[in-house]
Image (cartoon, rainbow, N blue to C red):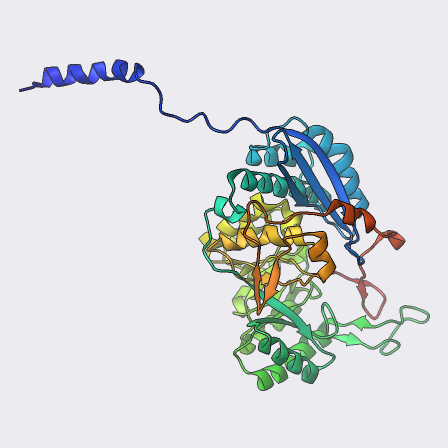
Length: 435
C-alpha cells in the first residue's frame, strides 16, 4: 500500500516522465504573409463612390477584400491607402488581426477621423475575409457563431404629408417589414419654411429654411396622424439628423413619447451630446445615437450611464469588424443595442461586414436596409439579399462576397464636382444647420 512518502516521490518524478513523451500538439497552419494589395474603385454602374482594398497573401489564390468607401472624401482615402497603408502592410502576418488593427490605428500617431478609419476598415475586413476563407467558415462563425436566423432591417419610407406617409407605411408593412423609418421630405424632414417665405435678410438666403421650433411642433403632429391610421403594430423610427439643439431636442423627445417610437435618431449634433442626460430625465423615447462617431470609446459614457438605447454607427467609419464587435459587446453588457448605419451611398462589402457582427451579437437591435440594383449583384457576387424585412448573406467562407475586377474597371469613378460636399440645410438668416 503506497505511503505519503512514496506518493510524493511519484509526483516529483512525473515532470521527467512527461518530458520524455512526444508532444501531441499539432503543428498548425504555416505563417501567412501579406504579399500585395490593390485599391479598387468603381461607380457601381451608378453614382456610387466605392473604394475597396484587396489583400493578396503568400498562400496561392487566398485573398481578402474590405470596404474603405467614403462618399465625401473619396480621393483622400484612396491616397491614404495607396501611399501610406499598403507600403507599411507588405510582409505583415495576415493572421494577426488585432495586432494589425492596433498598429495601423496608431501608425498615423493622430487617431481616428473618417479617412483613417476607412483605411482601417478596409484592412480589417479584408483580414477577417482571409481568416474565414482559410478556416472554411463564415466570419460570423469566427465571431462566436449565429445567434439569429437572419438580420432584421428597417425600411425607409415617408411622404410629403402625413396621409402619404401613412399609405407608404402600410405598403412597407405589407411587404414584410416590421420596422419602418418615416421621414417627411428627406433627412430632418419637416420644420421647413418654404423658399422665399418668412422673415429674411434683404438679399440673403431665399431657399427652404429649417426652423427648430416649427419642427418640434410639426413632426409629432404628423406622427400622431400616422399612428391613427396604421396603429401601433409597425415599429416606427425617425431620423432628426442632428438638426435640434438643447431643450428643443428634449421637448421633441417628450412629445414623441406617446407615439411609442422604436427610436428617434440623432436628435442632437455630436457637439451637444451632454444634453442626452437631460433628455433621459424628461422622456422615455428611445434614442439612437452616433452616426458621426469615429471611435468605440465615444460610446462609453452613454452606455455606462444608460443614456441611449441604440448605438448608431457605420462599421467602416469606426474601423471595421474588430471595433464593431466591441461596440456590440459593450451594448450587450449595458443593456443597449446596435443599429448599424448601412443605408445611402454605402456598399455591399460594408453591409456584409455589419451582417456578420449582427449575426453573432446578442447586443444586436436592428440594421438599416440598403437595396442594390441587379448590376451590383453582378459586380459584387455574394451581395446580400433582402427578403420581407430580413437581410441574408451567402454564408460562404469569409465575408461571402467577391468583386469582378474587370467589370469594376469598366465602371470607374465619375468626376466629383465641387469636391463632393455634403448638402447642408440653412436657417432663415442663412446660417448653416448642423447635420
